[in-house]
Length: 79
Image 1 (cartoon, one colour):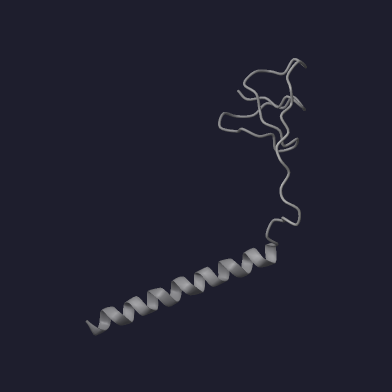
Image 2: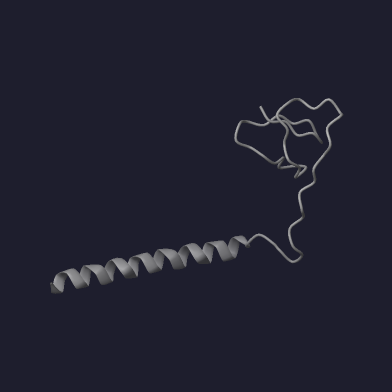
């Protein structure tokens, strides 16, 4: 099981980075002698998309899908 060398948290297989400390996980329980490899911070100004923006994108995707389905149905009727 992977472990965080900074906070000592244990993770399930497949995880590579501690979600609290943002450091790479090690494959054994930390004993204090590990070196902590800090990950590079995200670029300045980088932020997650706002929930409002995510909602709007989902609506636009759904509308695009509906319009494409309607266009396909109309084309198939004319064949």
